[in-house]
Length: 129
Ligand SMILES: [Ca+2]
Image (cartoon, rainbow, N blue to C red; front, side, top):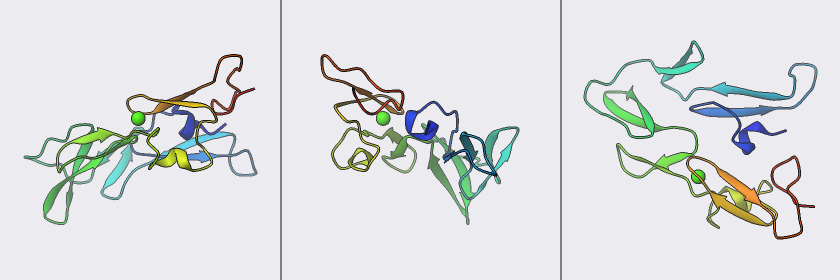
């Protein structure tokens, strides 16, 4: 399973899907953006901002400026506001091989796939039978 695609992960920043092999079991690992460090399973800024408040993101000092880094599933709308990514929009990631086979419904922050009448969604949460 690709938990990063399915949205069943709890990573606030980067999600990296892993497949069963010598190193990993099937699952996923969470990682943090540059400027953040994983502490007790949470991405914490290396330097806390004092002024900027980020919506749907976290602030960290980038050089000398306070910068918002959007949470997983969000994209920068402006400097302090991160907006939900519409994965069902034709211009975004559903154009790749992970797109929904039938219908895509955008949710915040992820999205779900549904099937046309008479079909059921497969366990990959993406294709229909
Ligand atoms: Ca979304």
